View 1: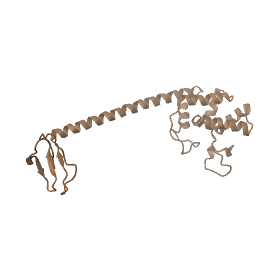
View 2: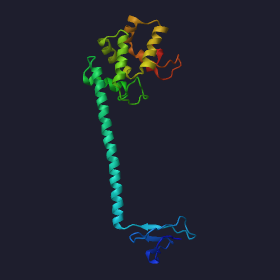
View 3: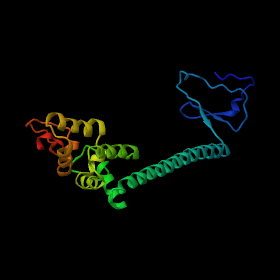
View 4: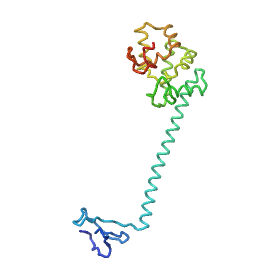
Length: 220
């Protein structure tokens, strides 16, 4: 049943062949309460809106959607600008080792998965480099006795070292070379210049191939 503070005339309702009451909301009806359940004949209320009401609702929805999309576009532009700024900073760091800007850009792309590298295979996801991380890796390598010229040669052979984990791969591998192989000092420097990929080895198949040969200690 319909309840309200004012009586509702049957003239304000029209019935469809499916026994569904159709209410015309262009007629002002105070305190209209629609039934919460279907009746035994299975009718359901169908509310018709006037043309002006539909235009207003469509305009309101479109305006809200436009505002949401505008915010998303602004956020994407800001994020893109921030990423470009970070990338440029990293290129500047690498270029201090006698690399051109284009060469530095290529090194970063190989190190962080933006171009395909045999070293990473298909596992490397694209990552935005961080200047602090690159500086820490280069400073650590300098601490091993490598000068700027040495680092230039090392990055030419193995640019991916900048994308390797400093703690989990680079430092761990240097520790293994010193502890297990007794390679340190000048011998370590010479080894890194000859075979810098040893800094990124993180697999040891022990002769039972795991199809990750570019990162396997068996190559050493």
